[in-house]
Length: 96
Image (cartoon, rainbow, N blue to C red; front, top):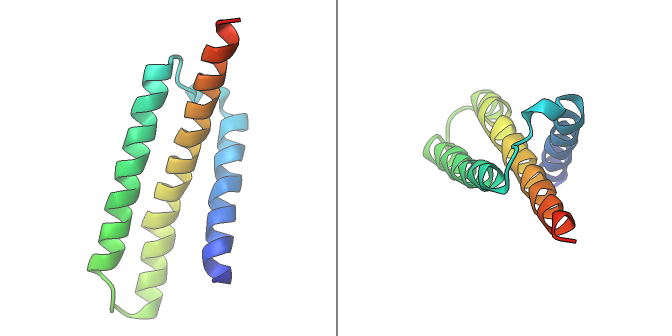
């Protein structure tokens, strides 16, 4: 349980750092943000499916797969979620 929480918090901190460090990567429109969010969801499906597919391999290889595939997928999904929230906030603020 602690590893899952640590992995999620680490991915969240990486996503926040990437968002603040590279503001030029943010989508310019809400449609682009929606596309990134959808790709993030499908990336998570793919990473979770891959982890389920290789379940039972030696623990070291499984941990390498978690850190090499699942962590980047989770980071991208969270980053895309931040971008989508930012795009929606800009839309509501632009309407005022």
